[in-house]
Length: 103
Image (tube, rainbow, N blue to C red; front, side, top):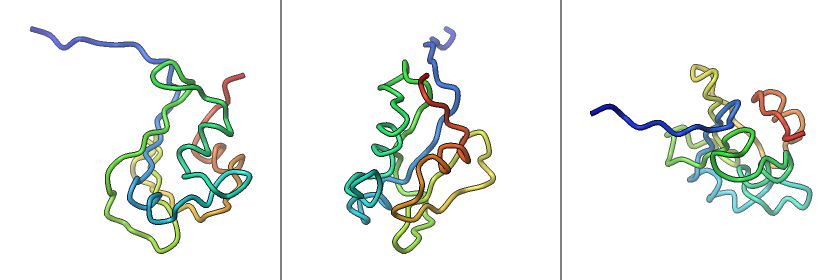
């Protein structure tokens, strides 16, 4: 029996450490009150689930645990992990991670 496949519109997937995000209690977005994954999704107006333009997924601990920052992995370049500080410019971050906006 072969594996079943499901289509997705994702151009890229980004993994965001859930534990780092939880420790910060926000720090991203215009008011600085949202977790990184949620702030990026909203900023880029990506939509939800597999029909979104890109996937931004919160995953379990990535075992880097930077102080006052979030660990992020761009799945196009799994050999380079990013450490993102609160208040980071989301436009620059989206560009660095290869995320495209919905338009």
